[in-house]
Amino acid sequence: MTQPNLSATPYKRLMLKLSGEAFASNEQTPGIDAKSVEFIAQKLEGVYKLGLQVAVVIGGGNLWRGSTGEKLGMDRTTADHMGMIATVMNALALKDGLERRGLMARVQTAIQMNEVAEPYIRLRAMRHMEKGRIVIMAGGMGNPYFTTDSAAALRASEIKADILIKATKVNGVYSADPRKDPHAVRYPTISYQRVLEERLNVMDLTAFTLCQENHIPIMIVNFWEGEHLLRAVQGDTSVGTLISDAS
Image 1 (spheres, rainbow, N blue to C red):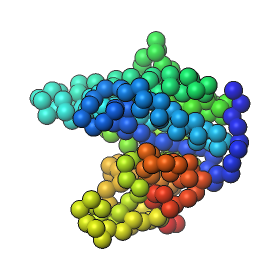
Image 2: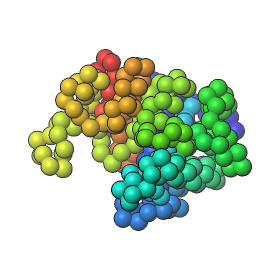
Image 3: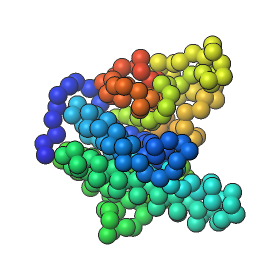
């Protein structure tokens, strides 16, 4: 399938960070919901049709969290490895959802699972994207004690992504929690330095620092709201917050 080029976008290669909770029907019901997978695949199809090369890093919180196991007394390394396996399950579900829409997709994992997915190889991932395949990166960084936010920032740096979009349920970064402060102001653009100075909760510090040091813009956008994702990848900052050097 040849990747189309139907609309102008300031970016060529996109890294999308999706939480595991996106795959559940709601926050109270764990597991993988078929309708949620279909919804995510539909959103990615729209982005793909803009002509973008797309990579996705997926969390596993809908199935398991390493921190949950640790609270139960489990060894942290074991608990985190279970979380990595959970991300692979989500990745396989998304691959199936994309392929049912006629898109080509590959799953690459940071931990060896050769029977179900390719190992993560940077140049191979880039080659897949150049050939019009969506690359789903699972298994985090392959190491415990790191979040999938950090994995997304690392992979975005490695594959030379033009932007990292973090899919959330809020439409950007605010000066305060908008659910608690009615006077909270949304920033359409903001600098890395100001995020640090104001201690705004964007992503974990390791992930944020990786993006800052490698000059990868971060876009915070409400993945579930209308056409916000499509508008964001076309450079519209009215639907989210763009964090960069120049903002």
